[in-house]
Image 1 (spheres, rainbow, N blue to C red):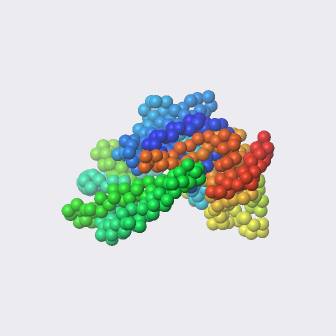
Image 2 (tube, rainbow, N blue to C red; image 1 turned 90 degrees about the horizontal axis):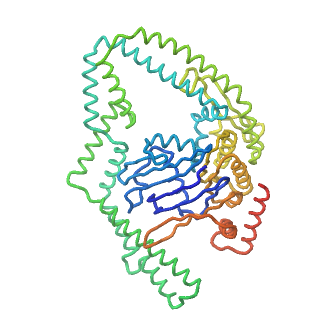
Image 3 (cartoon, one colour; image 1 turned 180 degrees about the horizontal axis):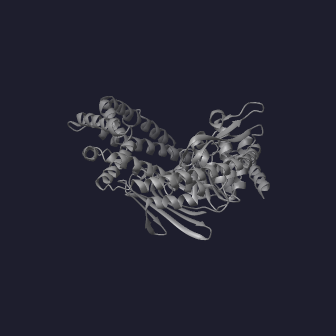
Length: 539
């Protein structure tokens, strides 16, 4: 369970503390308030790669702390991200690798982002979903290690057999290739940055002209947006002391601050439009160098890195070669036999378990107002054994009775994907004590279906802590604990806050979600009734 989250210097968040509770926690707030930023900050405890641009503009570093409990154990996860990209990780205040933090965080918390249901569109994910439900992860991992070793032994054998002839020439070639790669040293994302910079420089004059027009319209012209808002605010000044007038003037002042902040940002970005002598030519040459290396060593940065790793290993092997082919042949024969046996056993276990998965997922889909849907797990032999075995798994679906089963990724709509993802998670979530974070699971749904999803999330919170961002009141009313995120201006700076709502405040927030800006007594009554009905249905 995630009991406490602290975020400092992350995006628009200056400093924020929130204490989550067991059960169903819901987070709401207006669009742009920063709800997803909080989830992104939490995700930095679970993902090894976090870009440096998440650090708040005026901060030296961002820091995220998560205080978790699982099976009677306490874990304090902490991640710092420097403005220059350097990252440090800690578990219970002990320095650890970022990979270790990712593994521990992943065992405690799983974040389902706005596009998480898209994993259902990729059949590569289906094997792991089936294995998770059938508790076959350990068997698959054991097979994966054997297959990796078998592949490695095959490569070594091939290398040994060909090494006797032309060894010297190969050493010379590998040495030259590694030196060339090391000399140029292409960075992650460098090609994209070079292309973007070239585009900026080529269009600099037009961009500057457009920027000037924007600045004049927003701030500098006599009838600029800033001047008009300020003038309008001044018209209301004689009536200060009237609550609604003061509220209007405060909103106008906020608009003025926003305009000023936009203009400052424009002026700061405008500096990047000036190029250094020879920069344009240098960027073109660098792009040509990158293209040349990609053509020779890999189509992507990752491909070049993989080639470099392989080349270093191969060179080391050639320099320290020993005649151990017979030993490798014996190991290969043993691995071939064990891999075949393990893959057959894993495949049999999967095929035996598909019926239960189909029945449980089908039942969940029926509960989620998809009664006409038929769900099937189809397992076929892919003709070779990889790290996940020899099976090809496909999720088949028909949304209308009588229609043939087709691959889920080809027939499911956006709203159906959200519900199918929730059904699969309900079935495959396991019994372990874990926190599930859903960032806008309400995509593509509404009305009665949203109410059913909210009820199911509430039921899922009986086994797991649930943290959910939503825009739909039909989901929010089923939560045990309701948190509101707000964005506000303070000294010309945008800040984000979060707090738990008491019952009367919760009624107001549900009413806002129902009725928008204008909240009537009728809307409040509807919100109160929805909350009451939801609580009665879950207790």
